[in-house]
Structures are given as C-alpha cells and as structure tokens.
Image 1 (cartoon, one colour):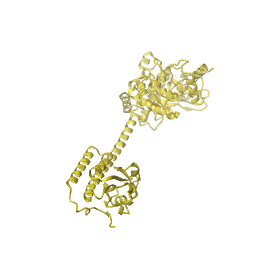
Image 2 (cartoon, one colour):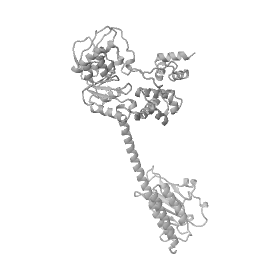
Image 3 (cartoon, helix red, strand yellow):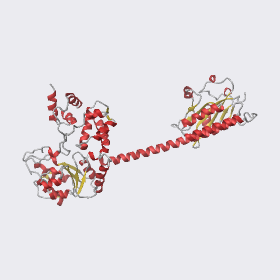
Image 4 (cartoon, one colour):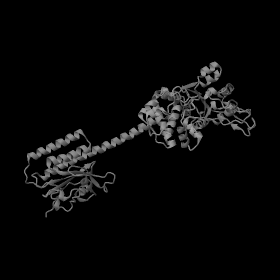
Length: 546
C-alpha cells in the first residue's frame, strides 16, 4: 500500500475543480472566527467555537487543540487535549502525547504540519482518543498542524475528515494553517495578558503593603485624617530636642506616640524609658527618677541609677505627668533646665542627655490655675504640644483597629473568631468613651467568650459596655502607699489596669466558670479577661456558687 503520510497536501485531490460553495463556507468561517476574536480574547471562547465552526461548515470533525504542559521543559513536556469539539470528556482525557509520539507528537517535536490521508494505512497513527470503531467505515483522513507562539511550537490543531468529500485536501490544510496561526496569536495574547495581570497583582500587593505600612506606622494603626495630622506633627518635630507634651483622653495611645517619636528621632538606638507617674507613691518619686546612693535610706545596700540616668542619650516618657507631686515638679524643672540630676543621698551632679516626652489626659492649664501644677514647668513642657484624637474623632479607623485586635486575640488564644460586616458597623457606631484601650478590651473579651466563629451585631451587643458607664481614669485610683524609709520599688512601666464600674451581678455563673476553665483555674488571668480585679472575680464567683 502506498504511504498515506505526507508533510503537505499540495498534490492531493488536484483533479477536483474549485467549488464556489466551499469558498463561501470558508469565508463564513473566517468571518465568524474574526468576529469572536473581536469580542473576546479568551481562548475558552474563541478556540472552542472555532472547532465547532470547522465541523459545522467544512466537515472537519472531532477537532482538538493539544497544548504543551507549561510546567515542564519544552523537550520533555507532554501535551494534552485542552479544547475540543465532538469529543467526550473521556476521549479528551486519553489525548495525552509525549514529544515525538504518534502523529500529534511528531508535529509537536518537528513543528511541521502532517497529513494522514488514510488512518488505517498509517502505523504511526495511534487512534488514542477515538477508537477506530467509533469512526465511519469509509476512509478517514487526519490533519495536524503546529500552533506557534513566541516563535515556539506550543501545541497542535488537528481534526478528522472523511476522505471522499468533494473538496481539496490542500484547501483544508491551507485553511487550517490560517486557523492554527490565529490560535497561536490568541494563546500568545493570553500569555501576555497573564503576565501583565501578574505584574499588576504584584504591584497592587506592593501598594497594599505600602498602604498597610502607612496605616501601621510605628505600630500606630489607622489612616484617618485626624490621626495622620497628629503623626505628621510628631514626625516634623522628631529631630528637635525640645520637650513634647502629648495631650488627649485616656486610652488614645500616648505611649505608642511617645515611642514613635523616639523611633523616628536620632535617639532611636538609645534607651526609651517609660515611667507611669500615676503608679509611683509620692515618697518614692525622687529615688525612682533620679536614683539613690548606697545608705541613702534603710535598705539601700547599693547605689542605683534612676530612670533619667538609664535614659541617657535616649528618651524618657513621663506618662500622666499631671499626677506628679508639686515638690517633685520643682526638681524635674531644674533637671530640664540644667541637664543634670543628683541622686538621693548624693552630692555630685550627674550630667544627663535626655529628651523628655510627657503625657496627660488632664487639662494642665486648669491645674496651673488651681495651683496643683507649676506654671513654669507647664511652659517648659508645652513647647511642642501634640493633641491625640479620640476614637470618636476617627471612626473610620475603628474597623481596622477591630480587625487588628481580633487577629491578635485569635493568635494569642488559638481561636478563630471573625466579625460580620454588621458587627463592624455596630462597633463603628459605638461612642467608645474609653477609646482604643476600651475597644481592645471588648474585642479580647469577645474572642474569649463568644461561642460563634462569625460574630453578628446581635451577638456583639452583650459584650459592649453599658451606656453611661465610664472607665475609671488613673488619677481617680488611690495612689499606692509606701511606708516611710521603705526601699524604693521599681515603678510600673505599664499603664495601670483601668476598669469601669461593674455591678456585682455583671457576669453569670456560667460565664465566670467558663472563663476560669479556659484559663485552667487561674483566677488572675480569668479576672483580667473579664475586665475585673481578682478580688471582684473571687467575690462574684463565691456569690453565685452554692
């Protein structure tokens, strides 16, 4: 039998005269394909419909487009049927070819079109996708043409055709060559679009990261205009040496701002010392701030550097400076003016290079008018006042803050709690008299106690503070007492735990016991999770437990 495999079909059916009807069908097919490309460049749309038109208009049946596996090197990559018309899913799934395997594999390997004029007479024809028994009994031809993109063979356009049709095979091959070229261009455009999409996604990710970084500068979360104005003022004075006074309500993040000022200054590599003036007994102020010499008082077995010495070349943050006793205000003023300190029980002056950042929620001008704060110290501190906005002035930041607190609480407690859009909207509508600290406490309590993975606005209501219950401010708490002559203790470097008034029946027995079990019987941690003192927690537990 004569060979049935030829690289082209130039001599096939040369005796057949041209048929105007076929020309009209070819033009219709090309017009429809170009219309598809004009409407969409998605290969799923264009290539499948192209295979459909090949079958309906020209009788080029069981058309398929075979594409290389892009995850493997070109020489080793197998190819599989990706788009087809007239093939079942099972037939498509069988259409997998290694380079050089069968007719399809040879076209992939050589990049040359192949024509099988009779599949029954060609041993290299695999009949892998469609069994011969599923094809007509008459002579069937098989045509396969390479699809190129970026000057590389990336796939094959192939189809069956009844050999006896009154149409030139070389006309079919010429038309298929055009369609294969169009298919290659569609695939190439898809690749370019995917690359551009990846570039845009990468750029968007970078921009999102930059925006996130801008919204979390120095650990301060938010992007509201009120917050950005305060941050802008802070950054403008970060390189100066003058004292900074942070003003605002309790819970607005004064410590974070003080640390941000330190981190944005040239002192960032030196110590940052925080002192909570509301937590130091009056009799211990001097020894805590300025240190003491050995033998300065009973129990002073060795000398100790105070917080100003430890902050040398860095920044010292005096939180709640409005709680400082008048006698101590005088000594602080002298230190700020002269840049020296004298330890308790000492005689020599010690030079210190410290930038002071002070904070208060009080109205110091009123305190000055009442005589409880020195006027000259106020003027010394008030060189650069920066007012921190309350959470009520930056409602657009509440969602971001809430999500941050939820993520932090989930991670710390191995929970998977989320807030519904309605719950976030409800948080945004709440007045938050306790500001960010209150919001953080509510979110932590919610994460610990809720039984829901998605908290609704209704579920949220039971965790929100009751209307009219204001948080207790630090200056309203009793100052710790110290016995005369007692050895100084380390000041609390964290803000005192601020809790609002809660009635004795504020928590059910089930809630108390559940939180206690969650913290493995540790009443201190259970109390903290509920916003109670240990004494309050113990009292409530005894009251409700038989």
